[in-house]
Length: 124
Image (cartoon, rainbow, N blue to C red; front, side, top):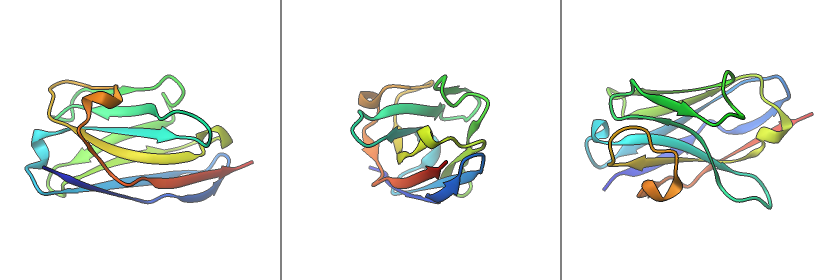
């Protein structure tokens, strides 16, 4: 199985940027499609972005399109989430997830491996 560890969260003002990282270990990283999800206080966890195993196919939630970018560096076994033009409603715990399924996978149940999450707080 694969282990995932997120980092890069923090406090930022509205309009600012953050880059989240998710380091994977344990198995061949390129065998996994990767996703980012988030959970705001009092809300269910929701899909943010996903990238296929090759990294060539990506998908985003409508709420982050044009502001967030998912990328992966297989040489470093790491997936990133670049977040620009942050808004207070982006405040949440962000989770990295991995799936062995091909293509892009925007659903939670399609991911069998999860990180512990990293807090992102955007102040107004």
